[in-house]
Amino acid sequence: MESSSPYPVGSPEIVVFDLETTVPNRAGQRFRVLEFGAITVCPRKLVELDSYSTLIRPKDLSAVALKSGRCDGITRGAVSNAPAFEEVADKIFSILNGRIWAGHNIQRFDCVRIKEAFAEIGKPAPVPAGMIDSLGVLTERFGRRAGNMKMATLAAYFGLGKQKHRSLDDVRMNLEVLKHCATVLFLESCLPSVSNAKWCNPSTIVTRSRSNGKLPCREENSRKSPPTTLG
Image 1 (cartoon, one colour):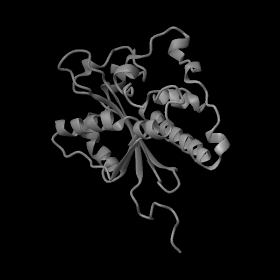
Image 2 (tube, one colour; image 1 turned 180 degrees about the vertical axis):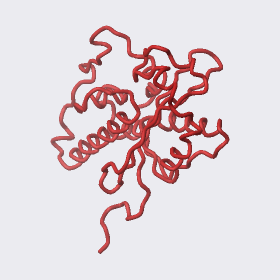
Image 3 (cartoon, rainbow, N blue to C red; image 1 turned 30 degrees about the vertical axis):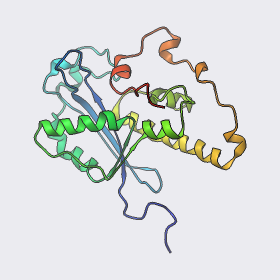
């Protein structure tokens, strides 16, 4: 008996991954990977099969603040005893290579950083079997009904809690956001009354940073925030 699933048995698994990095603050500086986190997901059931995360010590520790002013709370002390990228490169390669890559804004950011990190240690970078960038997919299919396309905003829209800006937490949140968006789109395709319903006005959605008068953390604005031209 043949399976009705569009994903045949033995098809590549999906790996949802995320990086936390330094943010260059002067000319000539590069992004440095501070954390890698990933989950492998069965494409037939969308269930998590395995997970891996590690902090990564950059070559230049001065690129990481002594005290945390970052969204993710990663400090110089936290990464000082972590493995260097070359020590975990083989593990990261085995997780990513030949699988379908998924993540939020990975085409513009995470994929580039992965290639740079492998090039720096003189090793070939992993190659995906396919790619699902949730930023592009959701911009096209789901739109800006949540207010904007940041992962934190999408998660808040679905009541999934606050984004922690740690790699493993973020990839699990990313998967849940995709599931929720897919469910809404499925219902809209099946129920005309749902698709014709008036959605929440994005202008009524207030982010935490706007509501308490604090500026959003720098990483949200300069590292992986979606370009304003999308959507």
